[in-house]
Image (cartoon, rainbow over the protein chains, first blue to last red):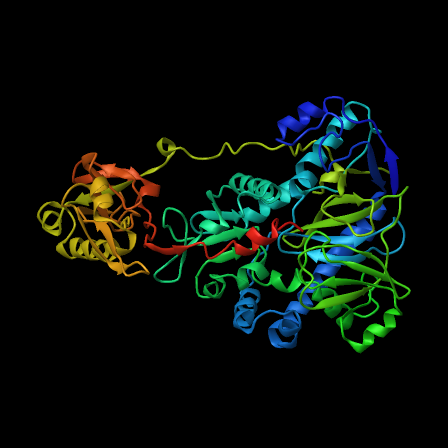
Length: 386
Length: 183
């Protein structure tokens, strides 16, 4: 794993425009940096990331199996009792999932360590799937990177295929909070993938969703929403006004309800309890668990539910080293063994491994100048070259 | 195939070019009647078949007809005196209106080797701005005449349920407060 300087594409401004990305004369495309790239060997990708990600996915499935039979899991994850059966049913019925992203600490050697699993509402998908790929093609064509570079990126075709394999009736609705650019961009891309898979689609803002006299969710034409892809976290839906109406609504959701078990950082504590010593897991405990003393004063404290690196605290040798601000400080936390991201000249890359229909099919690298990767991180493209 | 083994398959987005336009769609045989009486008098179908189709369409009507919370809005779309009260209420107890069922459509026995064509029996409506045309509950024009005809196969599918939405805005509060759902 190498961090290599490169020349930016000279027509980057045009490229940005083509993809409807912002462009600043001095800063280029916000949160995108192609003045460097990361280079991996095929062996690193296949043996250290792709294989382990799929293995971790199966460990996650074992936790869901446990959750549907053992209510302590739902209880510890802070999921309200009125949703237990609903989540369990979605798993027993084999409801399909589309995508998720595992965030791993990996330095090119030794096992990658799972930091968390963004199993419900990951973004940076379009950058990973389309924009990063186009960079590879154009940079190679212009001689900005060596010939023979390839990429861990089968995202687009995999997503289209995942949509085409949904057993499906009628129109697929897509929803997010419509005026948030990052979220809407991701939903637009997924909607396009679904249309490429031959489905008819329709967008609605989360706030616009209605409910009819029989408890069905409806769109703005009062049509019953049969299937809804929501880029909106399960835990938010559960606590909102319509939340309790979800189980009886008859709407099928993507991501499926069982993803609520995985997108919760309590996942990390349960995985460690069930598979202690697994090479791709870090020791992790619920805050307050006496076994957490094994972390010997060096750990990362994270809320069960937080987004984009908010409210994360790094404690090293008993002292707080960093603490990020945010709105998610309430509620239960986990303590996860301190395993800092690798450093490359003052930068800390976080490897995101994409799973589509539970297959590892792609990768993104986000680089921050802090140990806690935040929403300000830059996307750095990668290549595979042996 | 893993994409990193080959660079030939471009990932550049293609705007979906596969949407089937209505005129490319296969047609299916259908029969359209303004009433049960018209069916039993004129159709090749038996009285029993006429009744079965009518009964099915009638039972669909309240579920699939477009809904309005004001009679004026409904009559604006479907014509004066052409709306009735739906068997629903809004949450605040207000009335819900829907157009009268002006006819029905069912599969035809013709040209199908004795098998009824794959039309879902359903009610039909007439819009104020096209008073001769028969439309499905999903606003697909099927014909201006009664009797045997051909319709796009998608227009013959089961119409979608339309009930009045009682309230909106029960989702989205957390996003409004916390911002992006991104992880």
